[in-house]
Image 1 (cartoon, rainbow, N blue to C red):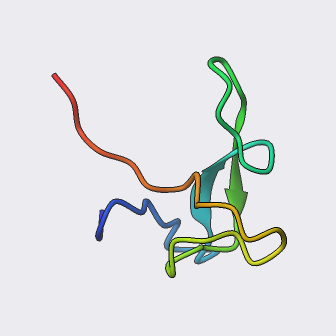
Image 2 (cartoon, rainbow, N blue to C red):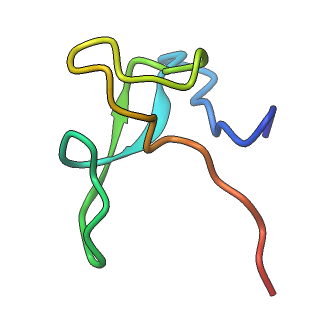
Image 3 (cartoon, rainbow, N blue to C red):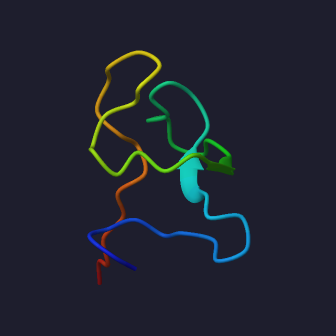
Length: 55
């Protein structure tokens, strides 16, 4: 995991929460083009692809 993004080595896509932006509890996950700059290029919203470990 680099800077909070989880990238699939085969497709080079990142784990993304469905929706634009996906913020609902229980939303499905999908592989999508990585938003490394921190924004969704389609609508300018903050990325929903950054992940962090919690305990």
